[in-house]
Length: 167
Image (cartoon, rainbow, N blue to C red; front, side, top):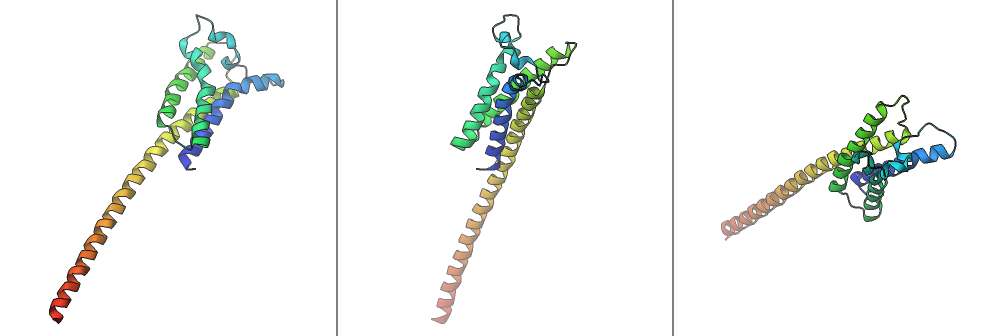
């Protein structure tokens, strides 16, 4: 398992648990994380902005990241790009919505989701650097092979020249 898949799994875990964090904290008495993730009514309400409704995708994005990274051991550039765009827009909408309220209700789950998006963004950057270094390594290996062929040809020609001088 390489670093980019580890980061993908970390991002997925943060996204998955961020969605349920407020329910867990409210269930055990710490009322510090009551935010939009706990209110299921927003998903059916017509007046709720679309970007708030697509928050239901957050745990699925998290599970997809974990599944691809841990079991399939495959990095998904497209999934992480979708996470960055969709989840960032939703979190921005939550921030705007709750900044109007008297009491700030954005809690731990919100910040976990932000870190999940940051981890996805980092994994994309990390992947690009790793691909670039892989491309450079391929070029270096190809150059070594070509150089080895030239050296072998030179040795072959030298051997033939030595044989002609000796004859």
